[in-house]
Amino acid sequence: MRRFQVVRCPSFSPSQFWEGCNSGAEWALYRSDVVETRPQLMVIGYEQVKFSFVELHGFFKRLVRLSFPIAPDLSEMAGLDGETTELALFGSFHSEVRFTWWSMPPAGWKPMVKVVDEMLKAFSGAAI
Image 1 (cartoon, rainbow, N blue to C red):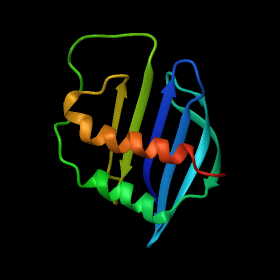
Image 2: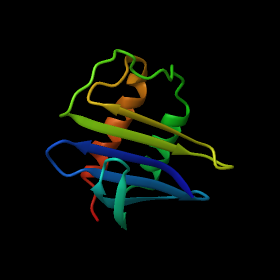
Image 3: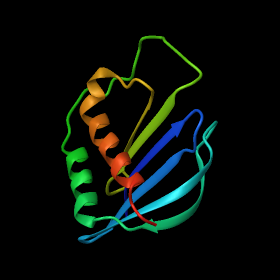
Image 4: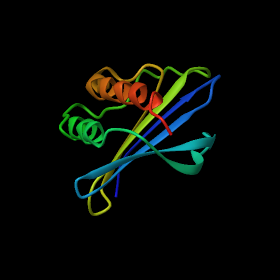
């Protein structure tokens, strides 16, 4: 069962796509290659990555326990270069939430962004 997706799309280097799944107490991490980011994210392939199931479950638990304002950035600023990051969390009965931010996330999202940054750093060092 899919539990989370994390995507990081920098302007001038390859994008990253990670998906965490669980079945009972078992957790697994998968990666895909990003082939398109706009207008819609498109990925190909689906490879399992060696990663601690305890750490995967820990990241998921930390994220679903967070409580913060969901308001997006309303500063009316825009830009062309930068890095887009996305987090999706999946629950039961087709419930899901998805957060996307460009370079500077909304201030209220900092607790979530901290966990996502830790995840991306950890996943990048994982072996395929």
